[in-house]
Image 1 (cartoon, rainbow, N blue to C red):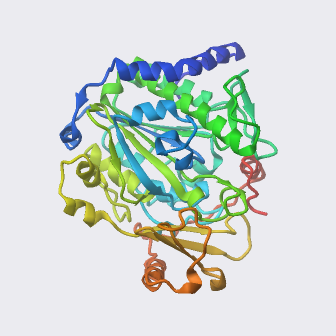
Image 2: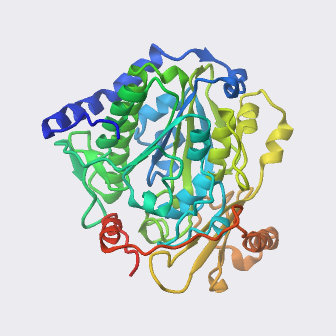
Amino acid sequence: MFRRLIDSPSTYFVGAAILLVAAFATQFELNFPSRPKGGVEDISQLKYRDDLNVVFIVVDTLRADRMSLYGYRRPTTPVIDGLAKNGIVFEQVISQSSWTKSSMASLWTGTYPARNGVLRFDNVLPQEVMTPAEIFQSAGYRTIGIWRNGWVAANFGFNQGFDIYHKPRPGFSARVQRHSPAPNPIGGSDEDISTETRDFLDRFGQERFFLYLHLMDLHQYVFDEHADPFGPSYSDAYDKALDWTDRVVGAVVVSLRDAGVLQRTVIAISSDHGEAFLEHGVEGHARDLYKEVVHVPFIIVLPLILDRGIRVETTIANVDVWPTLLDLVGLPSMDGADGKSMVPLVLAAGGSASRGSVDALKRPVISHMDQHWGGRAAPQELVSLIDDGSRVIVHLEDHTQDEFYDWNIDPTEQSNRFARNPPKLKVMVDRIERYLRDSEPPWGVESPTIELDAMRLNQLRALGYRPGS
């Protein structure tokens, strides 16, 4: 374990001060870059470099349309906006569940839930899985994971391939407030992760590394009490927490710059799922598969500053995230993945590839969840398929609730047109049936289950869930 820089509450006041200036520091870096300038042609050359690091930041519970770079009316993400301006933004990314463990299992394996089998609270990723961390580890990278969400804990198999897989000790900050939907929220804040990142870079920054950071303050509605208020509502608290989280990301980027490694580091920003604010009658997530809980960001900050940022409009899935990143840095692909590398889409959007490469990567996108994931009751599964601006949601145990939405005329999914039998409906339902039939895991074994002890169950319930009940 790398040594800790923070041992007393007083040091956390310093940490908070670092976050206060992070946004300005990151913008300063953009104006006076420690990264070279480059063009789209340089992206395809990254795979030939032997000095690149990868930092993978998962902002838990981040819905894309609450970010200013995705068109939100409030300036919630100025730091990430500044980074994305000269990087790569995927505009339509769909997560494979609205619940963390199932979504992260799909993200880490590049497979849809029917194939990886992680649909319920006691499912585990089997040891036979080859994770991206294991691919990095085999290539000689030092691999570190720092996380605060118990659904990605080591006992669920998410530690595979990490030299160190660590939940930081909760620290103290005088600046943050909590508006958590959970009655007993987890302790500490994402300052603990940003500080341990700086600690890690002090010790190992000159080695080649893969660093995974899983941020939780947005999920827990943690925000800076001294920041300009957006308002008093539950939704406003989410926006304030996103503004705070944006500064945590800024602190991480500043640490990379100060360590002198920004010019040889790829930073990816992603999320496991979004959050609902009564668009369909509920708040939160892990209940359904509507757009507000599955439309997530995917942003790549390159070790160079593009002359013009690239925005990819084609709809992709979270299962595509790791095939894309591994291809980008020239590492082996993931065996048996449903996801595809979207590097050709990036090059095409930047004007350096043929239209055919774009058309070849257009395909339907699946999301899938068991609404009874947290208990012992019989399955109640939803499968969603999105294809060219239309979405069908099939309720496997009760087809009278099946849904069809046309985003061209109903982008917020308020008018269920399933009963009208639209022309695309049968084709889309047939594709869902094929997806369910083709459910063999690529690694040859089914997802095992584990018994969770009282301590772990209580830790997960602190996040606002009720597993095992």
